[in-house]
Length: 174
Image 1 (spheres, helix red, strand yellow):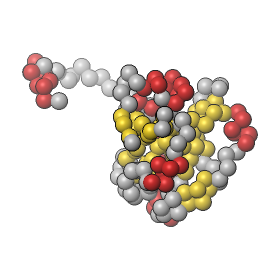
Image 2 (cartoon, rainbow, N blue to C red):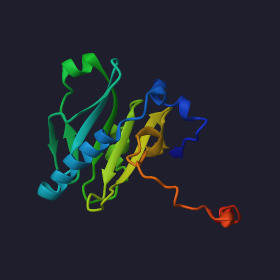
Image 3 (cartoon, one colour):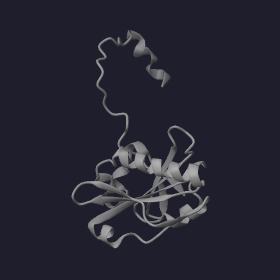
Image 4 (tube, helix red, strand yellow):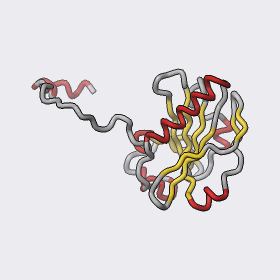
């Protein structure tokens, strides 16, 4: 059973993970670059672990693993890393396939952490499925609520852009 978590229910998921700052987009971008490498050179999946340090930063670890076209088996996490940081998520790729969790993913992804799948690596912006496990069910999460956006801020003077008076009339179109 899967369900979408509402904005007001977001605080319930995963023992406070929702209270952490958003994950920097750079970590997601780094994983996508690694996943593209394996997709294009070997046509395989690849796995990464996301950690939160009590010192206030995130870390992406690519552990030892065996990769295949249809699965990935990560090795045991680094004990030193596990002692100093809290594992908050796992991310793996589905190379050129859609990022829909497989029955194996459903079976393996049952800890109270984030699970991300990145797929369709042939697209400029790959597709991402993000979920967590809570009280016996997978909860689908909106990646925009968990990862920082790469499209924040800009340094352009926009005073030449005039907002039409008819904008308010068109609001019902969205």
